[in-house]
Length: 291
Image 1: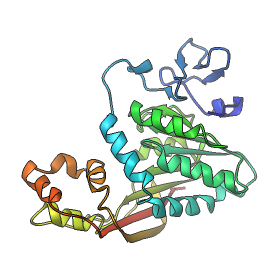
Image 2: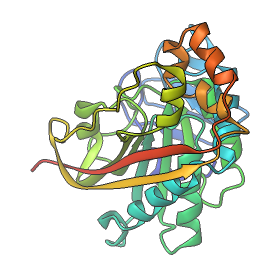
Image 3: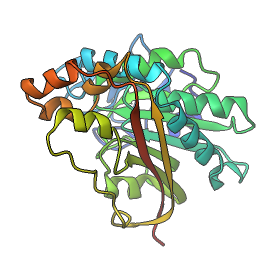
Image 4: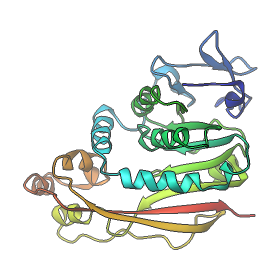
């Protein structure tokens, strides 16, 4: 994790909303009211009130889900989507003004898309950035922070709610929201006037062959036509391709909503099926705050 005083400037205390300062001697973030948030040995920080330092009820994905998603994503199955996210992000205006760009991945999970974007930025000329990844799952952000140690441009990962992010008003230039809840009012609060949201949602035929295997009457995902309240849809990019999921179809199943909705009998159908040809269908939406 690479931190500067400017990086800490955009962070605010999740308890009192005062500015957070990185105290190098304490290896912690502190505010003027005495609230302190230690940086874990893995490199992440807990910035969600009520559960700091790992105490309290666990939120978000557990160990098994994080491991399953990590194995699947590291197989490269969703790399074309990540590449398109990076390409679209690098074309955003926040990288053309010569200023430090602040990027936030809201609902970053284990940091796959966050860290790959950091890699893309480090390989290009857009290295003047600060990157944050927020998620409710402590297990997930810990994994992301460990992976980020290898990055030249190291994101800061934190346990935080998407609906109460520890960021100052209008401090974010680019916000990623990949398969995560969309907190419209909170996103509008933290976005700068010239900022943008890159939202990724499932397309109509996403994982269609898996749905056909699991359910007698599968239905297509509904694709939204309008932008969320407070936003305008600048453009929409469809990313669709076919990939072989036969070696990791169970890891994929565990990272989908189907895991919670599928009966034991229907799961057995998947056990007896090899998904060697599976459709990936994503919508990448570029959303701008309304004037």
